[in-house]
Image (cartoon, rainbow, N blue to C red; front, top):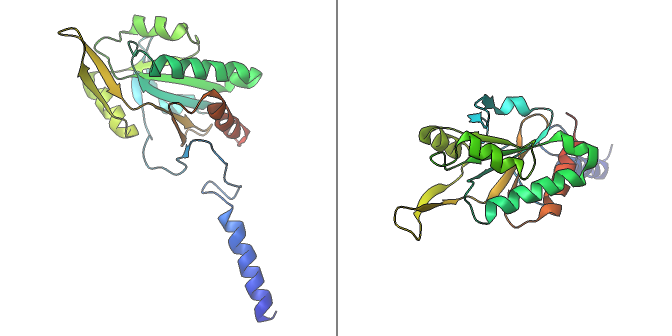
Length: 201
């Protein structure tokens, strides 16, 4: 084989590798959100659900999990995100059963289990709410690199919660894959979820 043929072969191999992702040689998905494939964080989540049952990330393998940190008294970001996720699930038809919405409260002081249960059921009864102690909540936020903090309300003694406004998409193997910023819209989230649903489980 001459030098020119070797150079052509090397270039072709390089292009092939450039088009492959870190999960095993398949073409890299064109996500609308931020691609987190291979991220070393958002690896664990151990909290209690709205029924008082201990839950962890491994339980949701086999489905595309969508995790969002928020609180029930949030005036806009949280209800909009949950409504969009419910819309996405409906739009997927039968595949919607393979999508699991998970809401993690950053306000466990006010978000009791009964309140979380009632709140999520108004969007989709299949959604899971997770809560923990203040310490557990802080640990979960650090694991996901999520920010949250109390902000004084308009009435003395009241407060709101500032928090990261985004969703994390996990593939069917339980790996964090996409960071969806608030405001991206239901269609962008649906497109990324469809890509993850097509991947081998």
